[in-house]
Length: 236
Ligand SMILES: C[S@@+](CC[C@H](N)C(=O)[O-])C[C@H]1O[C@@H](n2cnc3c(N)ncnc32)[C@H](O)[C@@H]1O
Image 1 (cartoon, protein in one colour):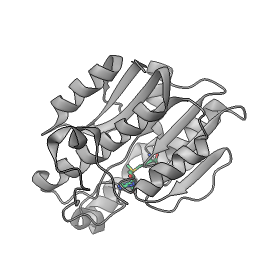
Image 2 (image 1 turned 30 degrees about the vertical axis):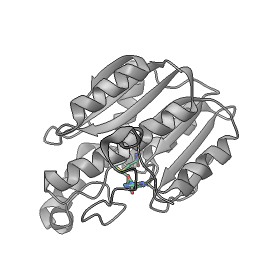
Image 3 (image 1 turned 180 degrees about the vertical axis):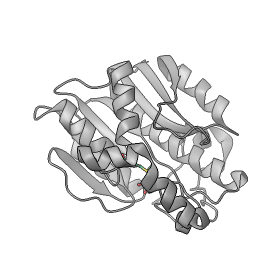
Image 4 (image 1 turned 90 degrees about the horizontal axis):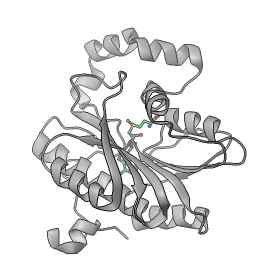
């Protein structure tokens, strides 16, 4: 069964699952044209964060975004419970599992497969489906969560009228999960694309959290409209 977000439940839509127009699910946010081009491959392999990830044993350059955020905002402590949405191939989960250690818990989820990682419980499925939410809640078994993170990004068509609503839908669902699972005082970190719906989303975050800051880590490409919103002090 598919899901509605709290804003759609509040009257923004009929409450049925919004179809994600043109979505071929499970990409990391590049158009198929650029993805397949030699130019994109060259840029990827020349990228210093990609090269660094090979040396450091991280599964993706995205690890360096999270490492930078952790350095600035002290996201992790040993023993924490963390949910990682849009986790594949696992760069963020590697960082989280390392930081929370054996007493901690990392639950990761993605529509794509992800190779197993020590200390990470992985749930594969489309996060817009109710079954995935239920699977995450079942693994938690009532354990309160310290940090919910979402790096989810839909497959970008290059047409913002299509891409932006899809991206906003995913972060709305991530926020719903955060509201259901975070302990009071907990934190929420989400990749959000600037554009239609961004300001309303920021306002929503400010209603549920004491403080919200915007971050653009160095590893986030300057030309990308993505920013990271870090919300602190869940009001419960
Ligand atoms: C930028 S990548 C995440 C990279 C990851 N954080 C890392 O560190 O390796 C975005 C991810 O969002 C996932 N995604 C997109 N739509 C999704 C959906 N409907 N449900 C679950 N995951 C989704 C993609 O499959 C992709 O793996």
